[in-house]
Image (cartoon, rainbow, N blue to C red; front, top):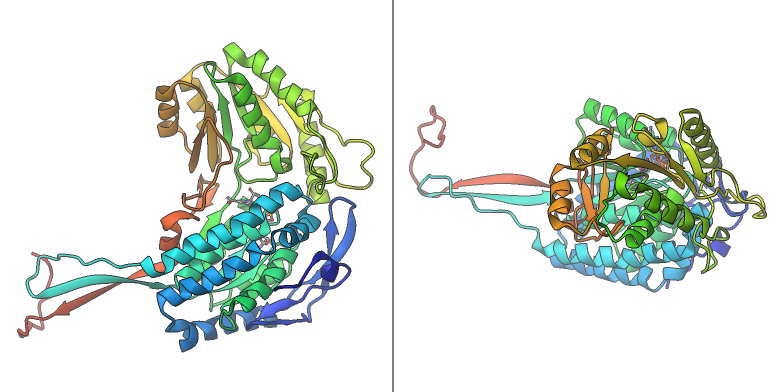
Length: 502
Ligand code: NAD
């Protein structure tokens, strides 16, 4: 049974994990804050280039070692099944560690911890079903087939909002395909990944298959993504960092997948069940204090029901209980970073100065000590040209816009740099499906919101990035196709003419 708990990590500098063993880093220390108190609770190291190199080298060596290279697909799946049992037996411990780091609701982090074994088992089951195809190439006595094989060392970079959930959705398909990984978690929330390394070792994975280096993006992150030993970069984070990753990846021709931010439209039509819709909109933005990439931060309400829907949303926002994220009755915890509190305040001022109406919130609640809390905030009379409608805030701020008909809705909703998620509340299936076809978004939720599944591909378009996690699509992201041609005719080939299909 694994052992690292919040108590073990409190006031210590967390180790890194290279080649199956924990070790202290030589890099300078970084403070990690508990958002409920605003105080430092542990520290991590900003790994040196030499340590990142050691991690990639260990992962590369594991890739070539017959212990991992020649393991059967079913054995790989079994190892992953064994790994799944460990987080499953440690849901509370994992959730407590992550709440300490990012301040999200304990209930939410428990749900995300419960998703870890589900994700690991889903991809464990795929490990021995990764197949090539046989291709009838119109040539007699010729066999043409493909094999799918691992890429190599995957560099996984994850954000702070749902650290282990984001990490497992990357590493599970990567391991199922036979790759090895080096993870660089966010400097704001590394504790979960560090604790997870112990679980991978306990499950019996060969040394070097899973490695964790910590540190800032510009130092340890940059050393990882520019390392020549990396076969693919799997990045989840903000669009500005995504652009840096893509530029670096272009220089080294390293494939990358980028899961970036969003400004997702969440639509209420006049024929919707208005109470269910208002609930959905409130949960879509205020769950996780708006710190989710798929937050429904742009709410479009049809003009005929605008006043009524706004009233319901404001009433529900007013009823939200703010406080310690560990309490079961609390619905809104603190923001994970002080810089996010400042960012929200800046957007509140910008929205006011651009002419939006502050319908609720906009400030910081009283009586919650030094925690990084902000009120759920609702702006009405928002137009699509305002900053509050165009830029990702990543906080509990809802912008409500009006639309007249479907053409007006689609024109406004698609007028965005982002295209990650979307949602629509309507009882008219024709309308819902027309929206589904015309909306530019990687995900469309109809009469529901924030309902992901490990079995269903997730990923955005436009400035929300490219590449897919989850589902069989993820296997395609972490494997490559090799084509094999066999001539079994026994005939001599004309060496000077290409044997092309005629
Ligand atoms: P961020 O881009 O600031 O950081 C993400 C990670 O990238 C961190 O680990 C950071 O250290 C690293 N990094 C930063 N600069 C780097 C560099 N030059 N080279 C290599 N690595 C570098 O994002 P964040 O603030 O941690 O997370 C919030 C963002 O993540 C939001 O935009 C949110 O929408 C997005 N996000 C997207 C998804 C998705 O699935 N699409 C999921 C969660 C979060």
